[in-house]
Image (cartoon, rainbow, N blue to C red; front, side, top):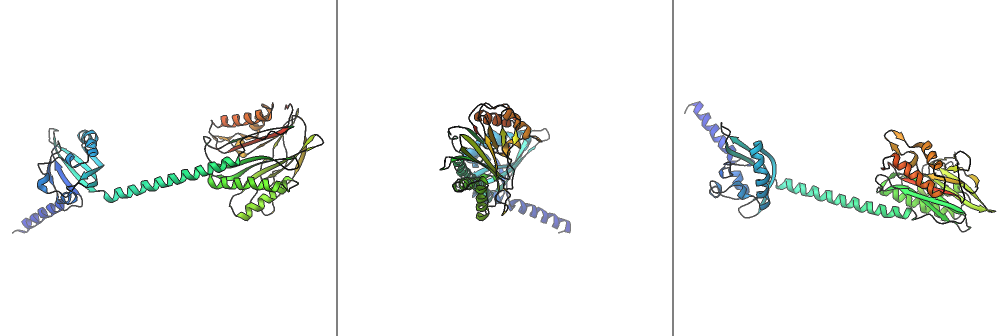
Length: 392
């Protein structure tokens, strides 16, 4: 045998082996799906004999019921229109009735006149891939369920942070609002509280824990209950903040917060207000016939320094005069690169000075409108004043 004939025969033999023993199944069908050729790999995957398939069965006959429907409605029309179909996920029914997940690539060859001639199909065993995809889906589902559970817990916890309604206090006009970030359903770290002490005085606490989510809500709960416990023995708001600072540092919660604590005491038929701020913007003081002014000193963050700088500032409130406490979700509300800012806050207060509730409602409406109804951060507002008519 000549060398050229030897190599030609060898190549023909290799080509046949490559077809029969390829790492994927191969089959050829007529345009209407009748199997006319199939390789050994496909037979091994499905358990059929060659005589069971060639000239006897259509490719669609080997699919599950759902697969046959998909074949008729999507797979076959795609082949006719585009001349190919790639990575189609199907299930083949083996000779023993078991299912084999596969990925299918097909091409439609045409005659010179454009008439369909033959469909050549490669079939890949997708058993491991499907198992991996199922594991990913299950992991995703578990993660989503875990996240939803954590969110529900955080929301439940956060509901305990916000009193359902401010208390009615004879001689005082009190109103408050809380609005979570986003569409109003995110979990954050803003909180407020209003409660009475045994001597008849009242305490207002308002704060903002760094960050959002479950951890922020947990720290907010810790801060609120610490303020309540510390206020029982404290003579000044700054003492309450120092206790809270110690608790946050000792518990190593890795969260700091800004907090403002306000004491309201009735002395000789007038109300005295004492405020201390821990890294928080001072309240706004609303007085009839006067411009709004900041009341108090900002102080330093709570939960960061061993010895925070805290200052107590007092004022006597007359009828119609109020203090407006807000978290930075108000002044730092954003529209593009523009902040709501202190001037808009002052304008909202000045335009709604009829009562504490009108001030709260006006601020909240304005800052939400400024952000298109989608708050970038949590918003907490408390207005505390002496009952009467206010004007700015």
